[in-house]
Image (tube, rainbow, N blue to C red; front, side, top):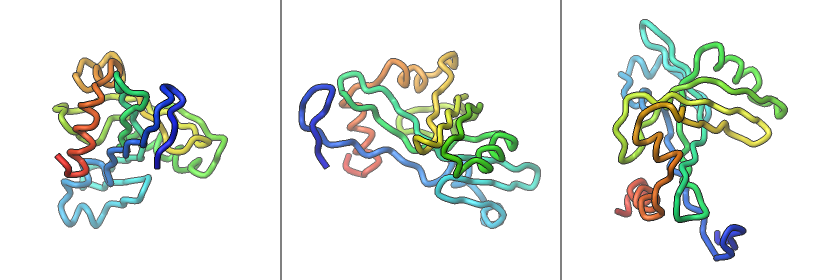
Length: 165
């Protein structure tokens, strides 16, 4: 679907979001661990023998320097049990807002990192929560989120995910 961009006045087509169906940890589960875990479209609980991990689906927007659009990612973020329970209890409450601490739970194309700390900003009137990496975390991914990437780099990532590269 094309539209006229309010920013530049040009006809544009929205970029697809780079979306993940599950947290990276879910993809690494054994058959037994997968049977004991729950994965839905917005919520995931992974039950290991010694711990339980909680995840929600969220949106991350990466600034694109030479474009009016941001590159969006549909990612998963881990939350504490308390934050997860509060989020689930208020899932259908359109007036609910909150900010949680979480860890990015997907590995994004072209980045190598272990864990990225984030703020998870919930405003149910807007849809899925947004995540913002902690700007103090010294990592190329975090730097790119705040400083931006080129339009060429964004299109390369989209093509990679869509297997058009």
